[in-house]
Amino acid sequence: MTPGGRRTGTGHCGKTDKVRAAVCFAGAFSIYSHRRLRTDRAAGLPMRDVIPVKILLISPNLSITPSPVYPIGLDYVAGAISPRHEVQIADLNEKTGLEGMKDAIRAYDPDVIGLSLRNIDNLDAFATKSYSSDYRRVAAAIRQTTGAKIILGGSGFTIFPSELMEALDADYGIAGDGEQLTLLLDALAACGDASSIPGVWIGGSPCARLPGATNRSFRRHFDVNSPHVRYYLRRGGIFNLQTKRGCPYRCIYCTYPHIDGGTLRFSDPDEVAQDALTLQQAGAKYLFITDSTFNCHTGHSLEVAKAFIRAHLSVPWGAFFAPFKAKANYYDIMAEAGLTHVEFGTESLCDSVLSAYGKPFRTEDVFHAHEQAADAGLHIAHYLLLGGPGEDEKTLKKTLENAETLEKAVLIPFCGMRIYPHTPIHAIAIQEGQIARNRNLLEPVFYSSPALNLKTAMESVARCAAGRPHWIPCGGNEESGRVVSRLHAHGHSGPLWEHLIPGKPGTPQTGRTGRDAEADEGPFH
Ligand code: B12
Ligand code: SF4
Image (cartoon, rainbow, N blue to C red):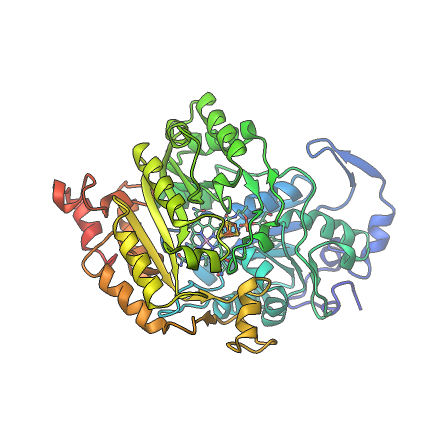
């Protein structure tokens, strides 16, 4: 048996022995153990003078709702493994599906394929779309094309490692920070024991491993000449940026502390600003900050904003914010730094429900934060998560009524709390007998408040949303994604909510352009 457990021998398409050795299977030890150590100056790390492994990192995420998402995670994985190893990124949005992917594999002939599994499903309890069967097809197509080892990673994988290792019959997986791939490749190169690396899963060997966190600073490898970068430039020019990892809170339904860790790990604000400038110079028209919650550390978020101002960044950006009461002029500084869109993770506008959800704020804070952001001239969206523990008809009514008072905001309600492992809602659902302890949750299961039927909740939301484009249940659907894509192709960028909000420029009250009318007539409502 190899460290990978299963796939030695001829492989699936007759890969050469040299290639198999390069990713350390039985014969590789002899190659690597006779090499001397040298220093990789660029990375500042000791490295072995080895045949570099060729790695193709694949993003199979074809979702366009609310817009196509640039695979930023792969930039970080590439940053960690290059220049030590040879790496290319294949984004299936740009490669036009499985056939394009197969061509890319044949052309590059990689030793290892890293598959980024981001979305598991669309979080919609009523029009559920699960992506696991798509991923099975992707893995099967890879196997048909190459004998390269498959290593899984990504936020979806971090939530469901054992389920996805099994479903995709993968060789390895890395839960948590993808930067750990360097350690895995080193271990494989040295025929060492990969099982001791935090976060690493090995196909065929049962284990229960927590996500690994890298203790090095995160290094992003953004290549403006990559074909997939051009794809996002053509489709609205939305790129993304990370300023820190982790979230110190523990809201009962949330996977983020499991994915990114509960301890905040900060990037240097000036380096973040340099990354943002690089994206701007590449042609980005809008940046989304991917942090779990941008303002959960006020000081760092302000430092980042000030670094943007110093760097004369001019590209507009948005981020997830918690609706905390902010310091005076906090949102003014953010606006000066280029923030245009605030996405509040509000979830409920009823204090008893906020408390049951474990949220670190109350309704009064939401109103306050909303007003502060609105006064700074920002476009605002509030996400709502309805029907969780503590929700009944009265609390739902209160939330929907309060939502109506949030002026000039887009409202993005989700009905039904998706049950994920490693979250308090998982334990609550087991305790209430809604799911069995050993239930496989890869196919979506939603919590339903004993005091409120989810269908009734959805009907109330549908009534609120009817004919009102600024209500976007479940973040939109594939059809609305297509409308947004069309608008992006016509030169619009960003989330485009300002076209949906009553009383904002471009809406029916103030007269619209043809393009704006296209957005309103689209299936947002
Ligand atoms: C920001 C964000 C958004 C933004 C994205 C904006 C943008 N332009 O980037 C918006 C609001 C648009 C969004 C939308 C959606 N999102 Co979202 N989003 C996130 C969030 C908070 C951060 C993602 C991110 O970029 N992280 C930063 C990067 C650097 O990390 P990363 O990609 O995970 O990569 C790291 C590791 O995962 C790993 N890695 C990644 N790939 C690989 C590959 C290999 C081989 C290896 C070894 C490692 C590896 O290494 C990287 C560096 O350490 C996550 C939650 C979270 N905390 O992760 C949810 C999350 C990814 N979203 C999720 C979902 C479901 C969605 C939507 C489907 C929701 C909806 N119905 O609208 C849509 C889908 C959009 C689309 N087109 O794909 C889920 C996905 C899992 C699931 N439950 O299905 C998550 C995990 C949240 C959750 N509920 O659990 N999202
Ligand atoms: S919902 Fe937001 S604040 Fe709460 S744990 Fe998740 S990321 Fe943190």
